[in-house]
Image (cartoon, rainbow, N blue to C red; front, side, top):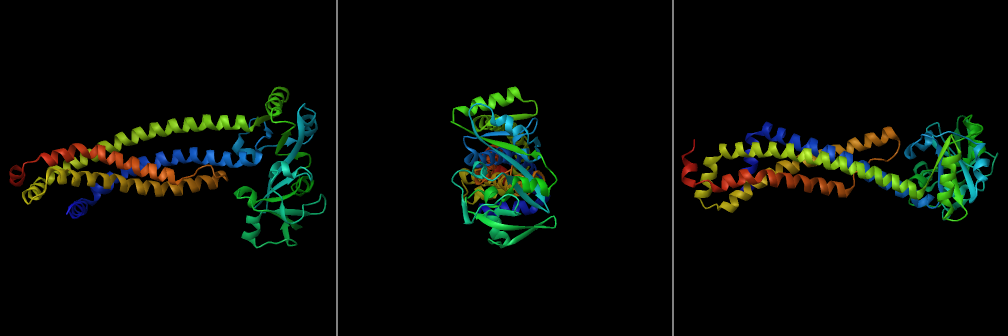
Length: 367
């Protein structure tokens, strides 16, 4: 009976119902979208730290960590960095895109610094410099149906696939294309330029010293250990969470007021119907639950639409940034729906109590 009465009421006032849901939808969309950055950034950084744990990352000064592919460093600085006390090894890395293919270039002998010591070539062998050879990740191989011995044409030049990395579970590494640094520099006319350096300290305790030495002594580059990266990410996500709380509070207040006003008007318009329900045996509790159910349904319905829109919004943002920095997780979906249900319950309590207190006799007299 409650569901039938609720659907009948929604059908009588379609426009009013849609406009009420719209307010909730916008609020949940904004809250979920902002929160998705916090989720995505945390996931992205943890994913990278799992590979680069214990290393020190060096980029061009002024370049943020998530835009390292835009970094440009003079390769001559590698020798100066190698002379710093506590530096065990340095991998000079170049990121470039050729014919729509994202390629990573590293000198032979330093590949394991960027791949991680546990990632090895699963099929074939590693590449050699000057031989127009490359290796690819398992995901890239499966997606393009490549195998060892196949040829990839890049800028009208042919490169042989000599190895396929073993599967890692990391989407970036599994979909990677890798070649020797000098070959990539020649292919892209970037002789003497690299994107980043990955430094392997002699001991984990040396990482902080190396980071400090580079930041103090070099004008064109900046360094960050995995510890400082995590601290920066924690600070950033804290600010995003604060913004989410502010947006959520505003969304709850506005949506709650709108839903409450609509439900109060709805109760006044339906006095006679409510009186009939109570006259034929409906209890105060049943009437209360019926009105609350309507308020929660409107709120949750708007939230579901808002969450669906946030999936599209975050996908568009990730496509523009070319990094998965916004992520709508199942946790965010559940939180959004529960938050909307809470708004519906709070905003529906007052009109529901008014409806439950109506006298059947007085309600039946209402025209």
